[in-house]
Image 1 (cartoon, rainbow, N blue to C red):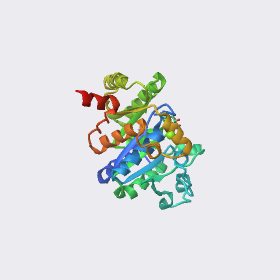
Image 2 (cartoon, protein in one colour; image 1 turned 30 degrees about the vertical axis):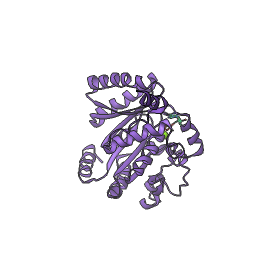
Image 3 (cartoon, helix red, strand yellow; image 1 turned 90 degrees about the vertical axis):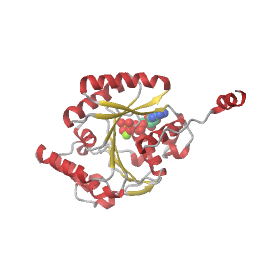
Image 4 (cartoon, rainbow, N blue to C red; image 1 turned 180 degrees about the vertical axis):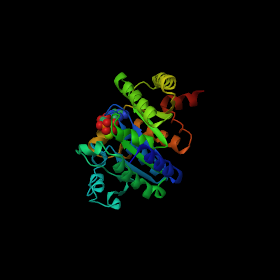
Length: 280
Ligand SMILES: Nc1ncnc2c1ncn2[C@@H]1O[C@H](COP(=O)(O)OP(=O)(O)OP(=O)(O)O)[C@@H](O)[C@H]1O
Ligand SMILES: [Mg+2]
């Protein structure tokens, strides 16, 4: 299919869709995308939203591992015409639905236009069933990754405070901007140990994104470093289910509130705050 035909179909589809599409990418691998997507879906579902998680990390899928799902069919089989769309859906996984991908198939990382269109048909057919459709994309800046970002309403770029992760997040924004015209991106900083320092990392990213890419970078939120996440991953459960009051879970809960348009939850005062209140 020509680029022009592809763009026309994309535009037509954008007009009639109902769900809100959110893509999560990073540039650098291993910065926390899959956990973010799963836990965001968890809280959005708890808020009564209908949510579909689509494992868009097509060649190195791992949502099924993170959630301990047994998968009888896969996107790979679907693309080869060996499975129906309905067979792909895992319903009510902690309150949300999942379309898992397949691991270890390099051809899935290089989809041609026709194959990508066939994937898009999955969302088109399921669109009216959901409020939010979340794409957990692979790392890197390949075509498959950036095309998911190109069809999303909200493009999230996730990074960690390390310079290499930040540079790769910038590279991702550069590609989605120049190849797909994306001009608004939401920023999430993960594995934060110094909360007051988040603002300055965000501000330098924001300035660079505006100056060189003309991208408006919005701060969606941050997620603190939390050992409970590592133990939840070992248990193959969302940390929000295992430790709903842990720092990671509270942070992601607040991001979910922001996405649905609710204000940030007030922090519980802690012992110092309670004593201050008593003695004031
Ligand atoms: N906030 C956090 N606190 C502690 N550990 C974290 C945090 N976020 C991520 N991690 C660690 O990083 C690991 C990788 O996370 P995850 O699989 O979500 O990253 P990813 O970006 O999806 O990776 P990939 O690019 O390979 O798909 C987790 O298994 C966990 O050990
Ligand atoms: Mg991942």
